[in-house]
Structure formats: C-alpha cells, structure tokens
Length: 429
Image (cartoon, rainbow, N blue to C red):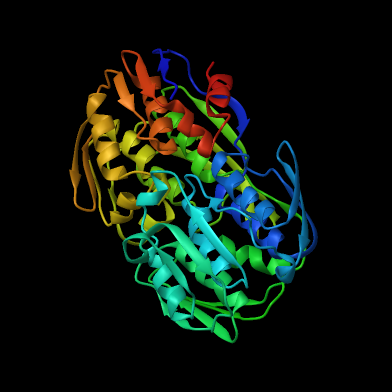
C-alpha cells in the first residue's frame, strides 16, 4: 500500500478538463461486445482496474480483445463462440463485473468459477443468485450462495418475472442479460428507477428491449451484433471536481464531454439544491446517452435533506456530497441510503469516520448520516479503506484543510480514476 501526503494550498480550480470514460458504460460495452457477433470498437474506455477485470473475463472465455491506451477492439464470436475458461475468473474488487457476469455465466452452456478480492468476497451476491435460480440457474457458493467464490454450471434458463426488492442497476442488468440468453420472455419490475445504461446500450447492439415505466421486458434467444461505442466522461468521477470547485472560493472550472444521463445526474441536482453555481449544456448524444459540459464556480453552500427517489441516482456520490455538506451553512441530513453499507466498504461508517478525523461534526445513522456544516477541516491521517471514492474524498478535503492530509492506501483510486492526482494538479492554479 502506498500513502500520499497532500499539503494545504491557496490555489483555485481553474480552466478546462476532461474526466475518464464512464465506468458503468465501459463495463457494459465490453460485456455486450464480448457476447456480440463481429468486431466492435470502444473508445474512451476507462482503463481502471475494475473495468479491466471485465476485459480479462472475456479474454479467458476466448474473446480476442486488443487494447491501445483507452481504445479497445473486441473480436466477438457470438454467444455460441464463447469458450469454457480453464481457470477461475478473478473479478478483483469489481462489484459490477461480479453481478453482471453472473447473469451471463448462469445462461451459458459452460462451467465457470469466479472469485474476488477480500472486499468483494464480503459483498452480497444473493441479490442476483436468488432470482437467477428462479430462472433455473445452477449456482453454488459460500454462505448459502450469498458470497463469492461462486461456481456456475451454465444451462438454458427460462424467462421469468422479477419484482426487485432492492434498487440496484447491477441486479437489473444481470437479470436482463440472463433474460437475453433464456428461453421465453423476462420482465424486470423496478422499485424505482436506477441508472439505465443497460437499457440505453443494448439496442445499440441490435437487442430488442422494451421499457414501460418501471417494467423492462426482454425476449430470450437474441444474439447481439457488433457496434462501435464512444464512452462519455464519467459523471461519478466528475463529481469530485464539481464539489472541489464549489467549495474552493474563486474557482471557475469547466469539465468537458461528461455523460449527463438523467438517471446519473443526481450529483448536479443535489449540489444545485445546496446553492452551487453550476451550469450544464448538452451538446451531443452518444447513442442514446446525452453528453455535455459542466461549468462550476466557487460558491456559498446551504444544507439540504437528501432522501427518497434521488438517492439511487447519486449513491456513488454521497461521500463527496458529505464533504460538501461540512462546508455548507446548516445541518444536512442524508437518509434512505442503506445501500452504502454494501459498497467497497461500509461507506456510512467510512465517510463518518474519515470526516470526523479531519475535524468535521458528523454522525452516522442506520441509513445515512447527519452533517453539521461550517466545519474548519484541520487535516490529519486518514485511511481509504481500500475504497476509491473515500480516497478521492480525502484528497478533495485537503484543498480546504489547514494542515496536511495523509491518505493511506491511495492506490485504490486506480480502480476508477488512475489519472486522478495528475488531473487535480493540472487544474490547481
């Protein structure tokens, strides 16, 4: 593990920048291309460790994937052309790979096993295993099939109706992929809308999918066809710079070519509710995904109450929103966010512990946290918990701390944003 010490600075965030490709779309582009017939080209692919786990999984199943920096060429052989891997698939720290690939592996006529690192091995898999078993999947694993490693004895699945009990785009996507491989029709009924990249992207690969409100229907037996995908910038990565520019007085920053999908822009909605000075402009569409620029200026923030329908659309951004709330006037309440407990770490505990170490007045609740604003952060030594978003939150906190901030295990940031510190240094002027 590598530590980094960040010194206090009087610099502001200025100029124009871009963030790496969207993590969710990068994963899905590889999965759909790997299942497709023909050659697909993916540009602006996120080369973080999580997405590379998905790449390696398909290579292990016989798909040739060439990579040159952030450009991939995927030579798909179709669903029937996939081969049984000779060794267990290593999903590393990637929950997206584990959940989505479970839907694929359950429906292929192959035997596969999959495992993850210590963190991923603690994350619940029963939320996908149970509904997949209802489709006829044969899956076995630790703790009544709740945890990795898992073994998949692939077979032909039967379409089913799934009424989801959790708000999870990963679970939804796993079941839609399984439904695409199954016999018959599969319906997924959501509790509330979650990020919809799977529904937006599958038609680009020639897959018919019907979306009627909270009900998504897919017919089985469909074979995806190759497609070229340009991945937009990741709004979850942009979130750290949105907050940084908002809380550092005098900042004026433009982030170019970011995905502005309405199921992902909760960070912008929340920050605007806090009084942040943010402008967005959609200037193009990549497939069905809106893409545009975000301009942020330093501003005085007000506390907010964050709950309900907005939570699924910013669940990954709550750590950095919590940091913004330490600088807001008033008390911010975040609730209905139990899902934070099942991320790379228990993010409720990790965020509260980290911010408290830096001098914030914050307390945990069963489903979120309460943050008393107006804190003067003092710096100190914090642990990333092996969680990329906690590490980046700590780095942004250093911009407004009176003393240095030391981040233990900064390398976990490579999971989603390998160039984070380089980009941060470039816009500090």
